[in-house]
Length: 333
Image 1 (tube, helix red, strand yellow):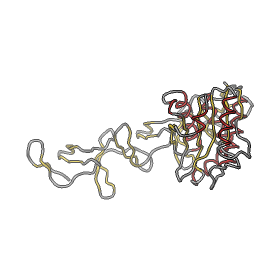
Image 2 (cartoon, helix red, strand yellow):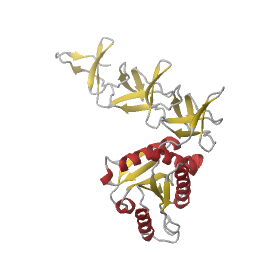
Image 3 (tube, one colour):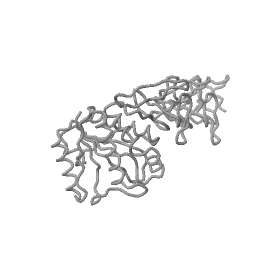
Image 4 (cartoon, one colour):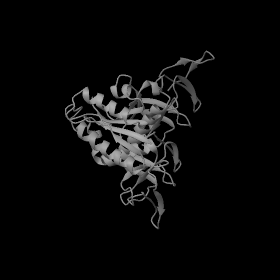
C-alpha cells in the first residue's frame, strides 16, 4: 500500500504547546510511523513541510507533496488543545460512510485503547486544508491534548513508537510475520524482528495486554487506574460480562464501568467494584429501583413486594400518593 505521512506543524508554524510540544511530538510519532509502515512492507513517503515554512505555506507544501506521491492514504499527525482530553481522528465529509471515516474510527479507537484516554472518535471536518486539498483518502489524527495532564502522562507512558504501532495496526492490520509462542509459563507474541511486547497493549485480531514479563494476560488487570478483563484466550473483552455470578460492563475501550451507565437506552448502576446492582438503591437520599436485569425503572409504576411505587423520568422514586389506573390511591414509599 502507498501511504504518505506528515507531522502537522513546523517550528515556524508551531501549533499547540503546554505540557507537550505539538511539533516535537508529531515529528516523533510521524518518524516512528513511517519506520513501522516501511518495516511491514508498505511504500511510505514523508510529506512534512520544511522547518522554515510558515503557515499557510507549510500546509500548501504538505498537500502538494502528498498529491505528488501517488499515495492511496494520507495521514497527518497532530496534537490537540483547548482543555479537552482524549484522541480523535478527522476525515472529510465526502468520506462519510467510506474509507476515510472507517480509517479515522479505527485509529481513534486504537489510540484510546493503547493510551487509556477517552475515545472522541471519528469526526467530520470540512474546513481543514489537509482534508480539503488532498486527492487520496486522508485523515488528520489528534493523538491527545497538549494541555491536559492525563493526556501528557499517557503520551509519555506509552511513547511515540507504541503510538505509531497502534496507528499502523489500525490502518494496515497487525504486524506481519509475528507469531504466538507458548511455553511452560504462558503465551507471548514474537514480532518478525524477534522483539516482543511487554507492559503494553497490542492490537492484532483483537486487543491483548502483555504483562511486564511479556506474557499475555488473562483475567482482571489494572492499567492506568482502570480495570480491564482479558478472556481465557487473552483477548480483551467489552460489553456485559458475567464473572463469578456478577455482571460487569466494559466500555468500548475495555475499561470497567462504575456508577451510572446508559447501555442500549437503559440506565444501570455499577458499584465501586464494577458489579451491576439490582433491587432497591439509595443514593444521596433518593431511592431507585433496578429490576432483575439491572435496568432502572423510570417514568413508570411498579408493583414491588405487594406495594405500588412510582418513579419519575430521572428514575427517582416519587413520594406521596398518586391515583392508580383503577382510580384508587397508589401506596408509595
